[in-house]
Amino acid sequence: MLSSTLLIAGLGVTEIILIVVVVLLLFGGKKIPELMRGLGRGIKEFKTAQNGEGDTTTKDQDNK
Image (cartoon, rainbow, N blue to C red; front, top):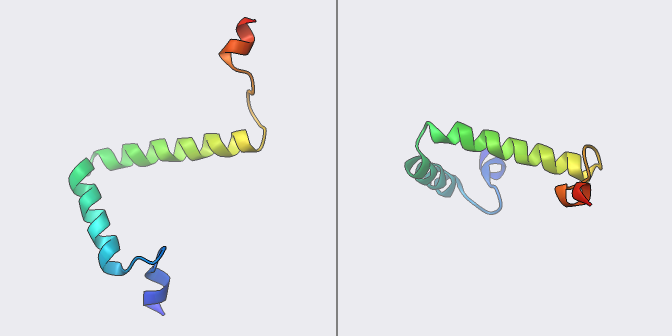
């Protein structure tokens, strides 16, 4: 049961641990929260744009 819940896109536990270690080595512990914050903002902006909320005009349209 546990092994089937840990499989993400066909990856096993060993592969997931290896990916996490590589990410920690590349970015370091201090940079990861900043990256996740930026990812969260990007997802939030995408969802609001997808729902049609917010400002839909661009700078080029405002200048004309």
